[in-house]
Length: 238
Ligand SMILES: C[S@@+](CC[C@H](N)C(=O)[O-])C[C@H]1O[C@@H](n2cnc3c(N)ncnc32)[C@H](O)[C@@H]1O
Image 1 (tube, rainbow, N blue to C red):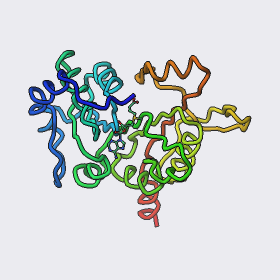
Image 2 (image 1 turned 90 degrees about the vertical axis):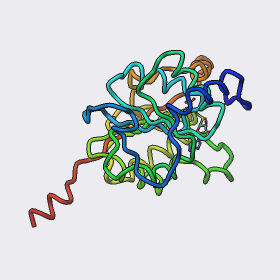
Image 3 (image 1 turned 120 degrees about the vertical axis):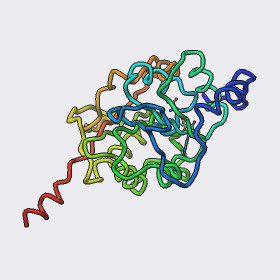
Image 4 (image 1 turned 45 degrees about the vertical axis):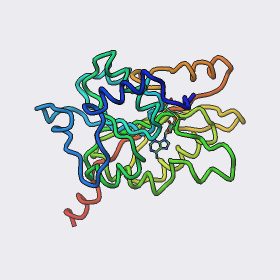
């Protein structure tokens, strides 16, 4: 799926559109209103982690013109590809940071500030000895959760069943998050699992995913929301 080299078109997009749509990584909180150039404070702030070649990002941003999308990816050809799309399709509500998303979260995103987080098909690291490299782990989710507003959502998708189960477990174990789905389904090995979501209509089915679906492979979506502060209410009541 990932193109190894930057094409000429991507390079041109990096040179011409980079200065406008690429936000340099820095240690200091991002000013969303200034970055996106909008006067309105009412726009939803969505972070996407690991957008690959950016097809899904561009699709969703066009479908949801009233929301702002901060798209983070380390892979240069992907950044070039999304910039090219932004130029071709005149997309105004995406900004890109080419850097490790964990650093971006740590340094540039304020606590309780995100309305939504998208993590689509994160690298599955299939081999057992590489599983620890997976992005979705308890510490990461704890961090992510602290950056989300109460009522904000995190939406993940994967086509790797075992990673899907790991995501479900890690998200379920984060007590500040609540699953939006109670749907039950039968997994490939026959076990019955509850909590995967229907694909929200804004997430398009990519070509890659479609090929897998045609071959009978599964895809799992997960959508969790951050609960409102019950703890502080209880403390106040005491
Ligand atoms: C398997 S690809 C999926 C791409 C895309 N979301 C899609 O659905 O096609 C995972 C992407 O996440 C990126 N990635 C992995 N870890 C990352 C990190 N810590 N920060 C930013 N991007 C990351 C990789 O470079 C890769 O492009």
